[in-house]
Image 1 (cartoon, rainbow, N blue to C red):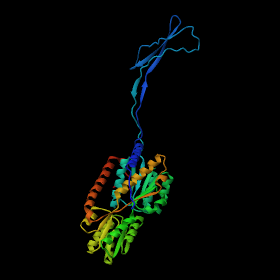
Image 2: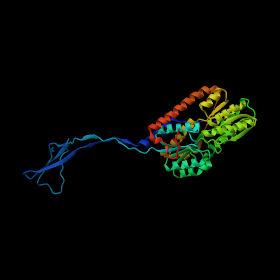
Image 3: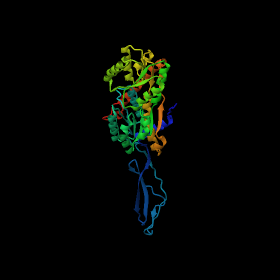
Image 4: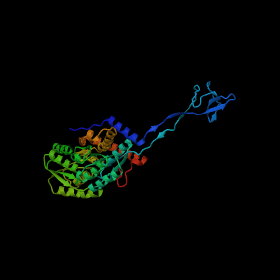
Length: 423
């Protein structure tokens, strides 16, 4: 089992470094000042008498003649003569505090689905936004519906001259060119979510994501434990997402029976009825013992299709929502696989901060991070954990509310033109 851990000290240091860059340097200094002048007069006997006069509160005080203050008329020309020392009173003044306000460092987080259409990305980008505010980062959030839009978002981000980019990697080949452009521009690149096996191909410093394959294996084993037989549908809602294919491959490895991949295009709520219709038609064809969906929306479509068919079919899904949690609680679904959007959103921003902190410390982030992969162990939630799921949703809603409130108070965290507004 591969586990992940976070160092609170490292995150604190990263936050302090980034905060200092955003604020600049605050300085206060003291100085000692006093205006003085030298007085001299010619005496009747030919001697020259000298003295020192000091200004206080804008007024010249009485001349202070030293004891050795006479230059005799017989003094050699060009030769210096010195008096004894005279004490001068200085005035100490505090200079005004100087605050050097610098531009907050720019970083970008790029997802591959719109938050309005995908519950996972609502939570992931909301978490990223909160962490960006904590670090004092000018965080730009993007979402895309396909690889072309995703690549265009990467180039839009590069134009804003960020110090780091964190991007999902569902279709690495299509993103390879803009990511190469980012590296050539000196931008640090980390990846997260889909694409762990492809992260090295784009020279990602660090990849963070769910262990998709293992999540599928666990789901298959759970179906076996529940006594499910017959063909299990694995419903893929993003046809070019490598992470979803890995979930189905894991399901095939873990389930004792046959697994059939079913591809649907899910671009928004208006397509859910169509997905439901495809599922209903496949159910009517027979030999379906179970359905595993890979996100919340296809999960709700599967619930509706099975209810409409009045069929005895086992259901399970990746992703969480109140609807799916209630279905598990009520026995209409066997279990859910929690894909940890909050953790992924938090660590994506923290990874960028870590890489930048290493560079500021004259440490090569490529050497220290070395393309490491942090794969999160999936969490299965069955009927016994339904109450915990409900409390988790209350937290997620508060998280999203906190992100919205923070953005309202700080315009710098708004998405740029062309970027998707965060949830």
